[in-house]
Amino acid sequence: MIGRLRGEIVYKQPPYLMVEVNGVGYELESPMSTFYNLPAPGEQVILFTHLAVREDAHVLYGFFNDSERTLFRTLLRISGVGAKMALAILSGMSAEEFARCVQRDDTAALMRLPGIGKKTAERLVIEMRDRLDRLESVAGVPARGGTVAANAGATPVSDAVGALVALGYKPLEANRMVGAVASEGLASEEIIRAALKAVASYSS
Image 1 (tube, rainbow, N blue to C red):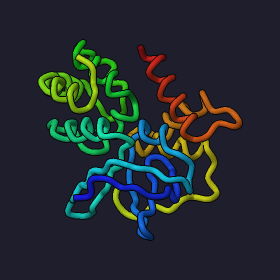
Image 2 (image 1 turned 180 degrees about the vertical axis):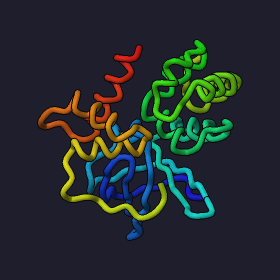
Image 3 (image 1 turned 120 degrees about the vertical axis):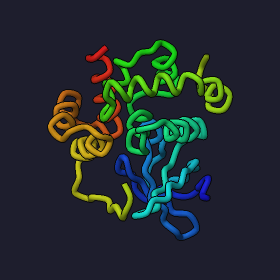
Image 4 (image 1 turned 90 degrees about the vertical axis):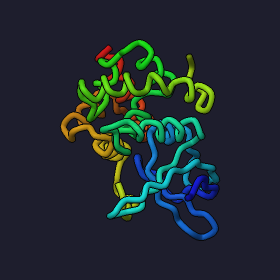
């Protein structure tokens, strides 16, 4: 099991990144909560990892801290929640916000995340409620597989749209979200953060 990586960031294109460790490049998928904290390519980073072994691929997921990984692993134990949905949850809200949704039975907020319908939101609230105590102590929460190449011709806007689509948003919706917040000079991570924040604010 690969539990942690320390190396140099080769590229980052949400939700994918590559970290080179002693000459070996590790491809990872990460939530936006991790991307917001990553340094620039060429700089050193330490990531906590989770290795998912499937019949068709071995997928490595990277997280900026152990709190994110703990919540990710806990979500995977919920019936109907896969890795893609868990990444979407971590990208759309912080661990603290997720905990508040569970504590307040706020299924409406969870349903604003891509791929989460009413039944799944209700299941998350019910099944995660009993796990919050463990998350509080371990994670600090209050009471695609295959080779991915960096696209040198991509723009921050197209990268942001691609990232939102990878998180589960439909292409038209992703384009609308990005178009509403994108402005010149913003990096892709900043556009994605603004788009997700705008969706949460608009729907609340």
